[in-house]
Length: 338
Ligand code: SF4
Image 1 (cartoon, helix red, strand yellow):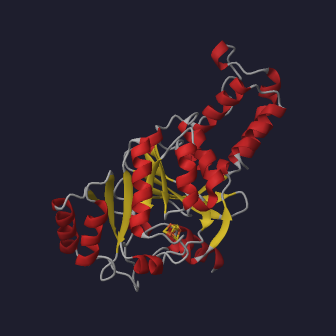
Image 2 (cartoon, protein in one colour):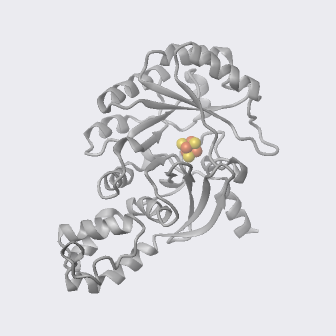
């Protein structure tokens, strides 16, 4: 279901744009959809036909996502395993400080070698209302003031649905535009379409290497971009919207934590309107990739800072629960299968 299908359904039961906005806002805020049905106050009022039709709309919206399980972490985050109407599962993560990480696809076609989600390939797209429904669901637990599109899937591969969701979240959803973060490996369509949007989100670009050949090996089915060209496009967008690009760098021991890579980062990002987010890899048992030692991570941070690159270490939320994106779902599916 896309947002426009919800609007169509509401129109068919007699809702005017003002009523559609009222119902949509109630849903997005995690409220029961009987808002306005019991009070006759002007601001709450919905016409009788709309009130009569709301239970069916409410049922349709409630069936979009269902909380399968919740896994609180020690850092204040919580991973939510969310079941879709066809039984497929995705993950949302409640982040500390009122953030939420949402999924945009079941599986992912990019196939990043260090990512569990990438191993399954793309299974299906999420509709815009399934993306937004993750926010409505999360708001039943706690406020959500920031939404990052960094869960399962590559948002650029489901662009129409993601942009529709962003538009709704940045309007009726009441989320500040720079608190909506579109995260991508880089795709020409993103740089063409984001500047044209009414709601222009912040942009996170997954860089992971400054060496074009290594980057291609790490992100095997990402669009081919020279890292320098990607940074140029990012810089143009950052200057347009007025908030910095967040570069993502999953730090893998012995692969992209070398001195050459650090010098490459300085060459590309010094003086840019950018933040470098270093995300030390979260290794599991028998993992082919390893997290660098704490001392090496500290050295990297110091070196980048001293050389003019604003750098933050980001640990993937809820590491103590079940690692990075897709691991919870993979485990749940194993349990279902076994
Ligand atoms: Fe897809 Fe993101 Fe995983 Fe890469 S890291 S495979 S883009 S979900």
